[in-house]
Length: 380
Length: 219
Image (cartoon, one colour):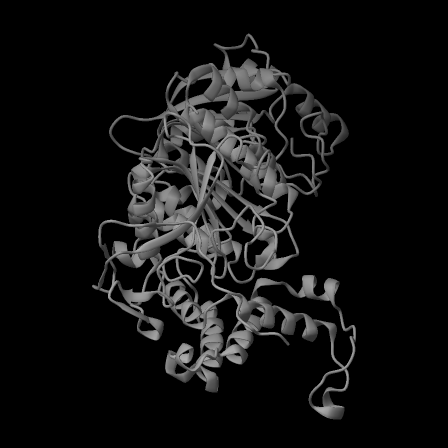
């Protein structure tokens, strides 16, 4: 199994001029945000859509990834003539704060004078910190109001935080397959992954780069665990069932035969460790775990959206057990409490949480229709 | 249109019916359409009257079509979801041909007039002469174009007559600002001044209600 980290390359990025105060109290200077844009900003600067990526996603939403060579992670939804139409809208996607694809994160140098990376000492960040950094990017691009903010899973958390923090800067908001807080079950799954990383002998207390190693085994197990939560029993059965696929190099007779689903997970794990930094994974999963939007508003989610004029489209997927429909309904009810303009659908799919990334015609039609209706209302 | 078997609310139909309702709505107002189906009415109110019109619909497939059409519709249930809205959030709350299918019609009406200043309610009239005649002659539950399903599978679990509805409004303290009877196609019927005749010859009733000034409905 090849676990050589992919080479570091230069990503399109922007250095934020002003300091970024984090929720934890630390102020970060010289924050860099790596981002990609697609399409053209119109003269009124009113057609921008910000796409927020999920836990292990990045800014390469609608193009071949320069490192992995894989297609953009939302290339079925974002592109010319697609629901998020790059011929009509100016689409921006930024690598999150804490990420490892060019934005400031654990792999970045501590400051201009010290080349040593932050590593495990990178300040704890929140979903709201990620959004504040994105707002600074949007300000630098001289965009006063985003036509829409869209994202799934952790991206959906950012969408919710955008609507709460900057209501006047978001015309339409599309939180997809997400929740207003991370559930105990989801925190538990994350913790299994983190323990695998922390327990890897190559983790070296988070300073693995000093020895030229990476905690590949731990990070791969973290990815494997998480990947199961993105799928559904039906999807796994359809794809693999109980099929046997060749033998294993290790374990002798006990592991003489391997299930296809085992090989699949191993592949998911090994390809992940080549592109993702372990400290980033710890940092970002922690940010998700601590996300509880209502907590910032006296425990009332409705208060987070008081007087909002943003239009919302909430979408959940019927077989998603990581961010089930019930959690979208919690958001819907909070928005009802403030009489917000809201559309809400549950898309029937047996593909689990992953469905938001896959080709689901009803989902595509829903997003396209909502954006078209919002564009009429926004006058663009 | 919801034609899926087992759907709880009857299908909406007939533009004429919706136009009668739309004629009761003032331009530029905030409107919530409960049981909005594919959203034909909210689209009509947005396009022709500049209303901020939104919808709730219970059938997910229908909601998906409405949203894909660009309309602000959310999946929800009239019986359980209205309680989440704040007081006085809308100028009009509309319940078109759905009252007879909800579990608690009186509570739904109370919620409508809590979150809206006015309520517009239409329902098929069970007092129509053809229904009375069928029951009298055959001794079995009447079946018509409107009441088209057998008693054991109809979604219309709370049928009422135009007179019944007047009685309920009085008991709840709602003032009837406008009312009319219409035929099945939604054409206005001429018994405007005589509720007894309207109850005999009108296939559906349409009411514009308002909270009585001062006191709310008795709880």
